[in-house]
Length: 438
Image 1 (tube, rainbow, N blue to C red):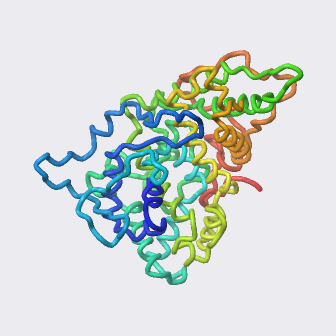
Image 2: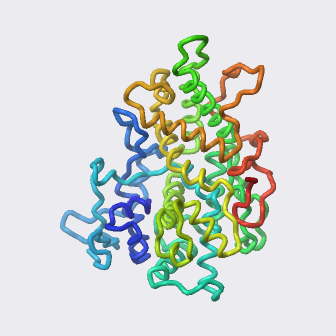
Image 3: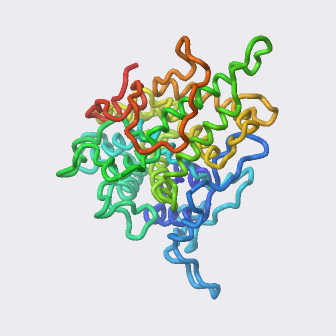
């Protein structure tokens, strides 16, 4: 979410000059303002409202609107894009999408937060904030970076403000790291490859506490079905120009895989479960993504300039004796692309055979989507080690049995560990995201 706000400012790095109280209030306004899904590059565009399980969840838990008599809005953010040092006294004027200058408030999928979490960015930036808070092991920084440190600590490394939309911490779920892992585990049957650093583990915290009491509410088959979808799409791309010989692509099977993934994700969204958590965790990770998206003041002061977020993160990690994920570049690049595709799948964009062909055939209206699908396949294979483009010798292009759209919450089957994402039970290193080779 914070990347949305940064794009509306004269310079994206001005986001970190806004008072943390205003940013916290802005998140509540963003929740109530409604949002659109990422554009996946097809014409006509896909439906714009994200699948939340129940769209009424937004109005059910947002702040009340002022009365028609002109009563003030309760605690507005007062952010003014033209002058961030000026408090407007009113809620943020969100642009009405779509327009060339304002694409709308983009609601990224929870997978966006998960993939970025796998880079180790949260633990690395937490260590940066801690070092500046407790001592002088890092060189002094500019006032602009001091503002970043204050805002980051206030927003993400303390108890959230009372009654805030981001307040997903309480006596019922007291640890934000555990809470995020719980959401990832339930939605995808996946967890970050690095352990929670021992510095941040609470007394009495049991191993894999985020898996306790989830019951059958785990999409343990997500990775298997997702990888099979990518494999079938790649098969379709290979066969797209096959003028001679058999064409093994089955568009109805591709559509079925999309439907199976849609139904699986919908099971976790019943009654709008995880809608608020998804919003909060996507916002959380988007803040750190914005920090690394360019040479922001904290990046410059840590002497971590670089061509891309992954390179900047690696240099910052070295300053505090840590190592990001070996495939951080792939994870950063994959986050936006996979977010948009899963949003579209949840909205039934590819639920028929004819629609599924948009994923691998050039139909004249989907050039951008075709390019993105090829990129997603390459990035996923590189990040995870899943051999999407290879099919073992002697096997058929399509399995004999169709996948179950709504698999029960059983433990996921063992999968080959890759350098970006590892299956449950694999050894986790002590440092953030030291999770692979090469």
